[in-house]
Length: 71
Image (cartoon, rainbow, N blue to C red; front, side, top):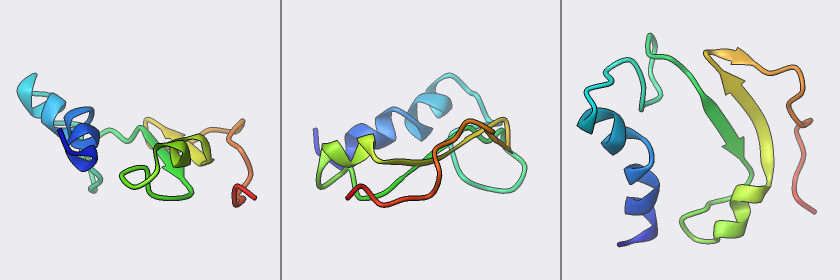
């Protein structure tokens, strides 16, 4: 399975399979649990360690890491 397909399998594909229409994509209205990372994990999986920000139920988490680059 291609890396980009693996990422999709863990998000939108799964929510469609279980008919969870209020999540699984970035759009106005759905529930928003989001992890923003610095980099492209489809090219380098270690980029998923560089967490920039975390949003849960559409709210930025107060304990989220500060915006930074993984230098």
